[in-house]
Length: 262
Image (tube, rainbow, N blue to C red; front, side, top):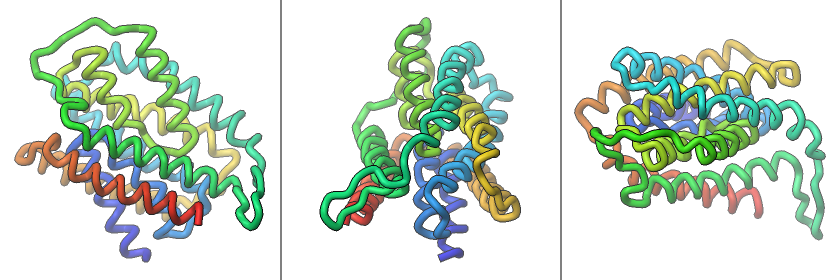
């Protein structure tokens, strides 16, 4: 199981490098089911893995002029606020047992995995749907501030709750609301994901017992996968792979829901 987990860590980075989002949604299931780590701690680990991997990816996009810093600031600030409120105030007040119906007990960990499974299904729909984020390389546009702030807050909530970067939400918003070119949307998305995830990790440090050797090894493999994905992106159209990956994420999401509810 550990070997499968380490291999999966590489694929997380590969998909981040190829399509700019979506890969991070695999991090928590890998940590929970393959490495047998507690769900809440897994979300904290995921924030670090996704944050570091996305930060390195964003750096290379920035060097090519494919990160819109104004959008990063406008989207990132409300996201950080939402991440902070979620990690510091919301998660600690959720009781260990939410309710019980007969033999079924909805614990905090089960609730988060059900939430994560539902999020994976939503992400899969976003990736499978044709034209969901097929921006043109020539499109430009002015930010729609209210929509951008609301979207940023929602992404921050998702990141804070389940430790996923939310690239599948960010990229369509950047392409459809702001009309950013696709490559710029990917680079900007990686920058936003890195800021959200790393600040969320910092907000969680006091409440978590971090095993740094393990966390750094997983992160290193994910970063290696990122470089592989970025090399492959020069030869493979990531948008063509996105629906295939979307179906895989859909199957995983359904499996998580079935496993946790049953």
